Image (cartoon, rainbow, N blue to C red; front, side):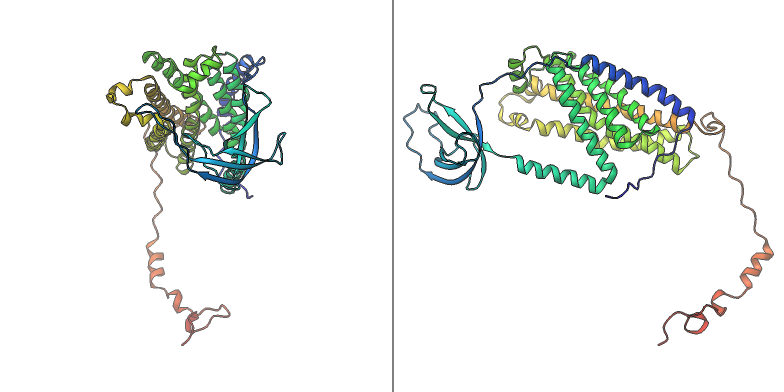
Length: 448
């Protein structure tokens, strides 16, 4: 693992650092206090379900056969669907570990396709009429090993390319999941306001990930302030948009199922919380890029004024936003692709489908996240320009309206010296005293 060769950001003047510390530290302390107040100390116990026991097994034999004729059904009703046959499985754990058991070939919509040596998960079903009698059915494939290899490849690629910074990014990713699993999700399950929990949780993730990944610098502090301001604006816009469109949060089957298990969860607030959490990752990218752009422009040309820095970095931000907006919309569309296919299968007009609860919910998500993202560019760029030019000696003359100072003219060369240099012998005509040179006049070409 090599060292990080990226050039560190120039140190900010002491006065600028004091202002940033006086701004960021109180916000961080307020976030910690809010997290402690909202922390789910008395989290509810998981709902005990009547799930059937599940065991691991390995397929040793698959026998398929024609399906028996289906009984007569009313016209238009589906008959029996294949495949049919038996699967022999060696049980790996549970009371029947080591035994060979037979199960029917999985059939029906979404049923797994199994072959010999596949590692699968068995579900033990008990006969309600005779609790002592049970049978096994194949539920799904085991996915643990492929997922472990995929995650290992993911981590190795990040560390190999990013080196120490890639390792810090992995640590930030782990911290993000830890905050989500220990604070945000339990807090919402405990009945706390989802929007407030999401904003506090997103702020915690932002502080930890940005400072851990990019270091404790003035540039990172500017990105933190820009991200936090954009998150608050996204929450306000989301509240207004969901109220104006009368969204209830019951736009998906998952939300309806959740309301059955936890009736006290505010699904409308959960929708807003999802917008906040979903916007955080893209906001981090934009704010860090804008702060770094202003810093690099000021380092490359210290003579740029504050206004020039802002305009140049904003042009970069426009190009970034143009590609990121498409990313946001396509990410939401990809997650909702099965439902979007209803646009081609439903006989209703497209305008009616777009105004349904689910599709209107996705439109609001994309629009609000994009508006927050657009606001992050001028906000972060303006803060970065102020911080970068704040420590210049004598202030920024161009910002005050004074014309820039013209560079001093180069001294004129002496005419006599120039003529002597031109009329003198060429360097190639002077014999070289360097040892080891071959050829006439020090020519290094090999003689033919």
